[in-house]
Every structure is written in structure tokens, then in C-alpha cells.
Amino acid sequence: EVSESAAAFCRSRHLNVYRGVLNTDLSRQLEIMDVAVMLDVIEHLPNPHQTLSLLSRAIRKDGCLLISTGDWDSALARMMGKHWRLMTPPQHLFFFTRRTLSMLLEQCGFRVVCSKRPWKLVPFSLALYQLSARLGWEVPFLKSMNSIGIYISLFDTILLIAKKM
Image (cartoon, rainbow, N blue to C red; front, side, top):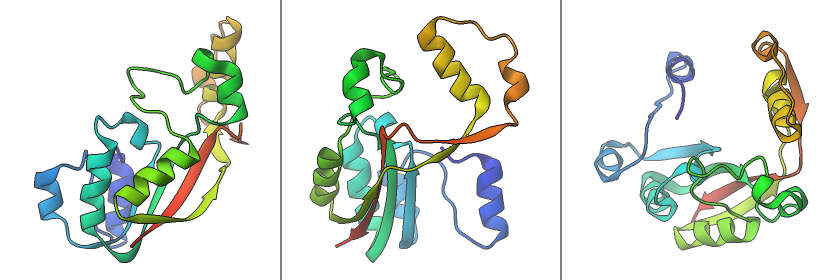
């Protein structure tokens, strides 16, 4: 879910921002959108197909949908198996590959036009936490490093841009 501060920032630039889980009632209130963004969201949804179908009705023809999620087909995910950093049920309900996510998008009226493995600016404390948790270390000063960010790609996430057909 978009933080209120991020939504307020967008609204200050006269953009319409909606926060929360898209359902039938909310979808009826939406204006037709040019773009929808779901960064690290789809894996948390109880019914991704339903959400994408509702979005498809709310996005104008040739509008865009940007989605990022973990890639279950990545080398790291396959190597780590149940110990993969994104294998966190019950928070993550679904796991996608480029192929399965592309197929789902097509079923919901979208065509993938771009697919890549993104780099992310990650708080150093989060990167160190995930590494130390895998190694069984305790790092007491993690919170003091929240303001430091590093660019990371473990090549285990995918970012897709899809156009509404």
C-alpha cells in the first residue's frame, strides 16, 4: 500500500492517487487511469486475477501497468528454495515467473511490452538484516543504518510494463 506521505506528495502535484486494495466498490469510483503501479504488491493479493481484471477495466486503452515482484524462476530462488529471501508465507501468497505473470496479464487484457530485472535502492539495514538472518548472526545496530541506502540487484525480481489491449 502506498504510504500516506507518498500519496500526499503525488496529490501536491495534482495527481489522483488511490490507496488500498482494489475491490469492486472502489473500482466503480475510479476515473479511467493512464497508469497503475504495483511495486511488490501482486504477491500479497488474495486474488491477483480479480485485481488485474478490475484494473483492466479502470485503465484506458494503451494505458500502462507497471508491476514488480519476485521471480520464482530466477537462479537465486531456485538455488535457495524454501530459504529464498522472498519465500515468506503467509505474507507472500503467490510466486510468479516472467512467463506465469505474463500469461496472467494477457488473460486480464494486457500485453507485456517490457520486462527486466530491476536494481533497487535498499536500506543498508534491510540488506544486512536479510544477510545476517540467513547466516544466523545478530546485528544489534541495524536501526542506526536505516538512512543509508545501497543499490542492489540479486537478479531475483522482475519488473514488467504492460499495455492495456
